[in-house]
Length: 177
Image 1 (cartoon, rainbow, N blue to C red):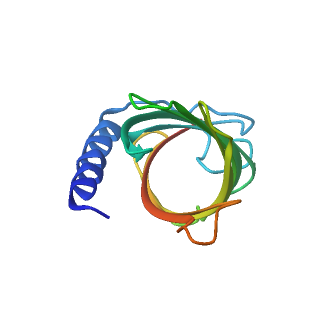
Image 2 (cartoon, helix red, strand yellow; image 1 turned 180 degrees about the vertical axis):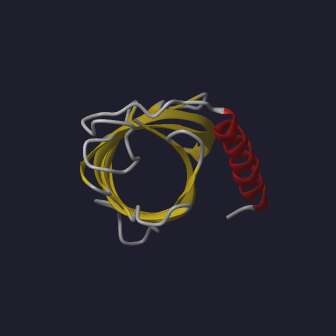
Image 3 (cartoon, helix red, strand yellow; image 1 turned 120 degrees about the horizontal axis):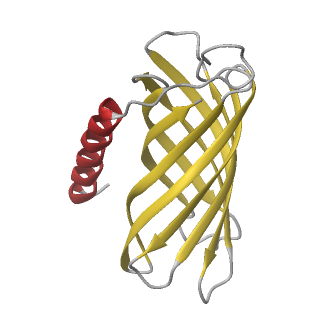
């Protein structure tokens, strides 16, 4: 990873951590007969994606949103949508996913997950990929969690002479209610 990219990730982590501490979101109950416990059966999560990326020899600003629902304690099914803009061509990514959060610990909550992603690229064929992630959430205030981890992604239908995988860090803010 380039030094410039590492600096951007660190700055983003500090900004997101600060924003999470300032958020005052009440954790409303959803099917739990009281204040909900994040990552428990019946809880819903909403996350945001903000960052930058490079593709097609162009720089992009990335914005997105994700929503998830906990089928069982710790087991979330969700979907993320990202739009890459300010570069050419425009890119939109849709990612259904599954994640398991080990919610027994009070402060740090490790997670593992898998996803399938389709990238819709203006003027090009869609690009499919799949991947895995691992990391941890850190308790914030009133249902807000900040997390970070690592993602491995591999592209399908990629020529054997190209490197068709990518590993990158992720920073997460999740609001659970």
